[in-house]
Structures are given as structure tokens and as C-alpha cells.
Length: 194
Image 1: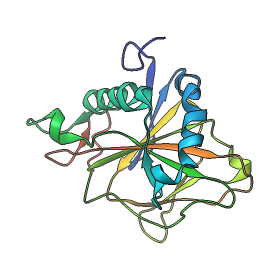
Image 2: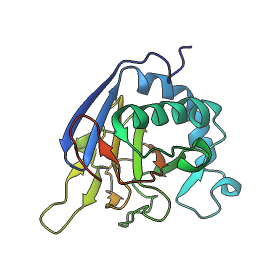
Image 3: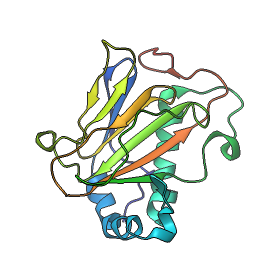
Image 4: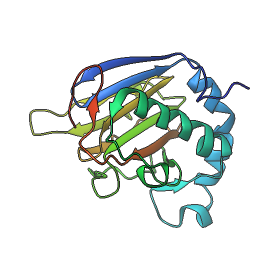
């Protein structure tokens, strides 16, 4: 299997000054091999212990996806000169699991732990079933991301956001990740400053 962090086809698209989308060809197919494990872990009370996000035992996600996200960050953002792999990102990505009946749908942010937040989905359920990701900049600016296969969404960690309810029981599997910068990150192509 090709390593995700290798020569993957990555295309950038800016949907909002605070929402950057990266199309990674084949990402969804690549992550599908972990779907059963993530669903099994999400139903294991010893792993979740009442938390909304949980760490997975998936080596593919913890190493390969993690490396891909670091590479995207360093390729597309100025993050400061004192980049240090031991400091700039948490130990591993985390998984969020939601169904029609299960999930935590409150606004939150990650300003205490990260500067940049990234998220991707395995087999997104489709806009017609709800389950978008709502961001809150202010009362008149509340964009909603409806996840698409093969996309990773980057946004500033300080922005309030929440998963929206969905109308079906098909599990929503969202992989979340964060990165710490020593300066406000600046996008190398757009100049967006977060």
C-alpha cells in the first residue's frame, strides 16, 4: 500500500478565509480499511470512558495520516522558524463518532491545545442526511462544511465549531488533528493569517 505521506496528489481549495480544503486523491479509500476498527473502538467503554473524542489504536491513522497532515501543514503554511516535531502537534489524531442518536453537538474550540485544526471523514454520509460541521465566526457568519470524500478541512483552532445532527444511523467517523505554531500561521498561497 502506498504511504499517504508520500507522493499523494494533493490539491488546495479555499472555500473561506478560515476554511481551507485539501483534496487528497484516494484518501477515503485508503482510510476505509480502518472503519471497522474505529466503530469497534467507539463502542468500547474502556476506550471512550465518557469522552467525545478518543485516541485510536490504528497505526495507519496515528502514523501515516498524522504524517500526511504534518506535511500539508508545512507545505502550505508558515508556522514559525522554531518548528519542533516534539512540540508542534499532539501525540496522535483523535476520532469522533456520531449517529442519529449518539454524539455531542455543542460549540467548542481548541485554542488551548492547537493553532491549526484539521479534520477528515471516512465515508461521509452526504449533505441530504445532515451531519455537517458548523463554524461560528459571528452571528452573520456561520458557514457549514458538508464533508466530501477525499477532503481534509483545515481551519483556525480558535474558531467555535460543532458537528450538526444527522438524520440516519450510519456512523459518522471524523478524524481530528491539531498543530501548534510559534506564530500566527499564514497560508503560503493566499496570505490568510490565522
